[in-house]
Image 1 (cartoon, rainbow, N blue to C red):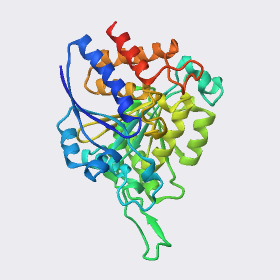
Image 2: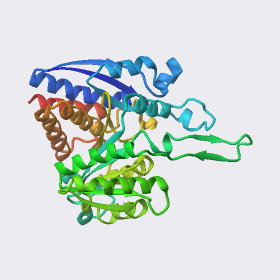
Image 3: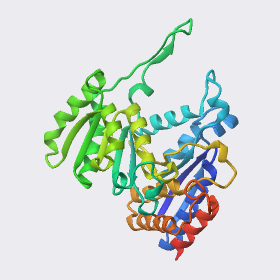
Length: 352
């Protein structure tokens, strides 16, 4: 099979972790006789520095002409520390989501048996936790009208949703629940927000079409609390953009490291596969960042192209590396492996 993959390494540790995922993909291609054509493109602070745009049109064209996008991370302290900056790396991420029609972010959150002691929660609470967070990506307060008053003493951000936007993300969430344990939790703030009431009304109207799915509803503050108390009670969580941003990050720490979890952003055009962590600029160039989340994102990429056996082998390699302690310093400070060493080990395991 011929695969055309856009590679948007981005900023900070992005280039290092993406390189390890490419090593793994190359090993898969060699083993299963696939051909991979990588098309690198600029995004984030790197794109601003070179082209003045965090998501240039040339990058968008590369993404549109690819089967999938392997994405690293964006962000740079020089923008984080300048609240008056008119162009920011994160604007590139929002532009990419909008232009590619990436209306859903899929985050699987599962604990690794060999790393349960790394979780901040007790063993009996986290052991066996396995959920998927489905987050709406192109609506809500992040994309609504926003601004400041002339005297800069007042600011506003508008949260807007349409029934159509809610229906399409709920349909996807119901689909995921149907393939898993058939349980769906809709997270909102319907006791306060009009948009949340529309979310709840829409979900309730759709329920009869999915009689095999058990649906429950939680206010976001209650859901945040129960994620910590009883993470194993959740199967599929679906929610709006800002709530999903917060809930998915909260859920991710259950595993013990942000460097372990992948994600996929799917929608109308080309899907994007990326780790859930940021650009970690303090570690850039030091060969210490954990590449596992990016490697597992590559597994999700393969799965999206119906290469199920290949995706499973990547996951098997990752689990084996964790069991044998082939991990970076965020997992084991006493005997850490370099980013590149983890990538080399995974590629070698896959090659057999």
